[in-house]
Amino acid sequence: MRNTTKIASINLDIRKNNTIDNDPIILRQGESDVIIEATILNGGDETLQINFATFVAKKPDGTIVSNDPTNVNGNVISYSVSKHLTESVGKIQDAYFVINNEVTTCGFDISVIPSTQLDESSVNYIPGLENINKFLKDTETDWLGIGKRNWYSLFDWT
Image 1 (spheres, rainbow, N blue to C red):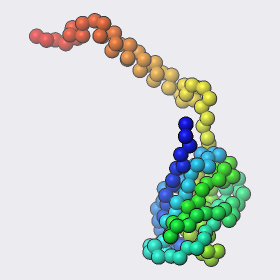
Image 2 (image 1 turned 120 degrees about the vertical axis):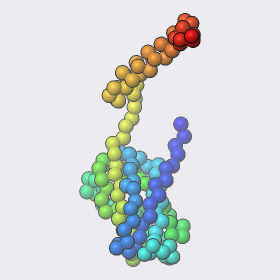
Image 3 (image 1 turned 180 degrees about the vertical axis):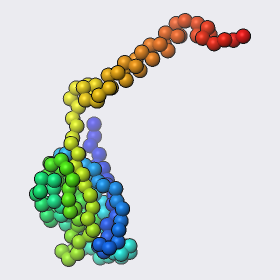
Image 4 (image 1 turned 45 degrees about the vertical axis):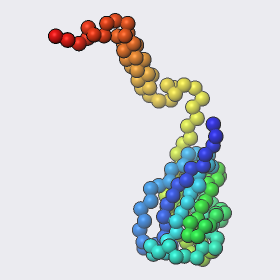
């Protein structure tokens, strides 16, 4: 199976009084195949000169991630999530970008959820799945059994 990079797009403003509703970014523990793409606004206006930017955040375990490199294209900052950011489960606090070493964006939410690695049948991991699988197999058997009988007898054709 080929790894594909996922994009989490958000909008951020350098004017903290402008409220922007972004969905929280959900990452799995240890995940590093996600790029956070942030469109940076200046009071709702996209005219902002960004020469370089860095990512800053406080991880769930309290460790501060500072000056992680980013890519800049116009007013869009792209940050490739690193495994050190997602090694702890919980809410990442105070995530933001520092632009040109002068100004910060408003903050955004990142949640790191536990990773699930299925090494056996999913029946062992999902409660009730065994009953659902049995129901589906029984239903399939019933329908296939009808084909062996005269299915016309199921309907009143008078």
